[in-house]
Length: 476
Image (cartoon, rainbow, N blue to C red; front, side, top):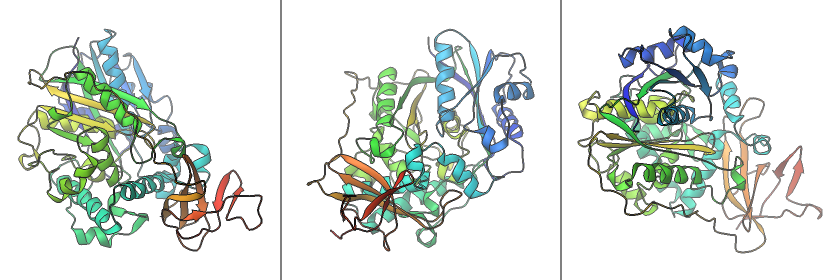
């Protein structure tokens, strides 16, 4: 049995005075379809209890949208919640439990202060790493800095690539009527923007947003089918993984989705990639096998990710420009693709070929990721000769037994309760990583040597209150 998308709608993504339920109703209204056929409501919100103080949210929403009595359930996987709720609704139809499911995803965030929102979101981070004061931007920054180091991208070159991502996504945000940021930016704008967590600037980070998405999926045939879905999880602690520059959860989810669809990445016409931070668009393209690491610089320099390029990516503006109401974003990606594939998008943002689309959504710091592939019914594809297999990337071990700086960042907007700026480092010894708070006068560079023998007087690192604190380092 195939599963199809019958309709999709979006609210405006913005800083809004509207209540959560009003954004959900707005998305449903944008679908412009009859809901009499709905057998169940699947709802995705990341944390309505903390953001809005509303619990038992599935029953509440079903009642308020006129579907009281219809089975309803809430699903949550951090910032991939919108993709998760679609995935499980898909499974329910595939299993024959329901014929038509209304899938909703939303979040209301902007009424809270930035430090408060940062604190709520940071609660998805592994507790021992969170105790250092780490936030999502700081962990993303350390992943990004290490990615640049491993791929021989110096600071200036990497900044230009990140700027290219931001400039592109703001270019398309201007063309998306529901986007939070409808203004283009220049390279000069990017370079003048403040650092949030080095090397990430303001224009590298998605905004705090309010918004909702609605998708009606069905066993009844329509013009767009869900060809493949994939999900995978990873260790919650960043420092317990085999690599921080590639996300195993995305790779496994992508392979599952391609194998289910029966065709590979060469068939994808355009993609919506989770760009909560600009480097995540780059890593996401690589992890979904749409781009090779050695192609990154050329891809962005030649504007190949634009709607008239070889692989349009985030032509909705992405999370970066459309906005990122955390529970809604994964489903919003699917809704945007549906609109693009059915000719309901501005002409100056629509690719020439729109038969196959891929979406990738990240939950937490890549701990629960999803890939969804959409296909026009009857579209021709180049099938897989054999199923794709997962080959785990391996971290390059340190050359000796000394501790070295693996990555580092200076965080200027830490979670509520932490003083700014906050310096964080990841230390490496062989294949072992430690996240530490740094009290050194300067932020150490990757490769700097650290002494970690606590038995020796004058040690450069100490353990305090459940986290490591770096007091000094030796230059490489």
